[in-house]
Image 1 (spheres, rainbow, N blue to C red):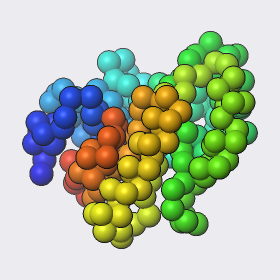
Image 2 (spheres, rainbow, N blue to C red):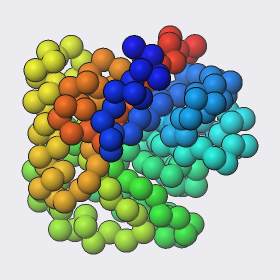
Image 3 (cartoon, helix red, strand yellow):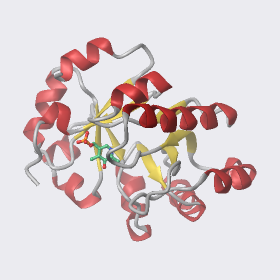
Length: 208
Ligand SMILES: *Cc1c(COP(=O)(O)O)cnc(C)c1O
């Protein structure tokens, strides 16, 4: 399935984030010419090196990578959305920098729904137990939850985990769920994703 076919079948309210990590400015501009405005990057340095990142004011940039605290300032300076906030501590740091820079980033809290040592995120009880404090944090818009499923699950299991994410978001009154990648986006859409993050399926094989 290619970009335009995916766009055509996505239900209303489901946004496609084109994950451009490992791809060049010219690739990004090609998808912009098809109407794509939201792009996701997972490394700050790689993103800001791309000419299109600095020069193209029509695009919206989403940070989707692991957050290192010494990169938070650069992330808040350069990105409109942050999908991968994986701790209360980082939420506070992002808030502090955002207030200082007078930015209001849209933030997703990354949650971990399956035991997976490779993935970051708050687990369910950390999120629920800290929710009252999290809600008080100023300077950021917490718009939803983000999750990454472990690799190699069945479609049924992928759907179940995505469905859990949707139920938790609903319980907390959060409109957005950022979930689903090239190989599991259809289950994510069925479960109520509002942002799917697609890289290789539309761009092809990464250069790096
Ligand atoms: C790379 C990445 C994606 C996109 O992965 P594909 O398999 O290329 O679609 C989505 N989300 C995150 C967090 C990523 O790091």
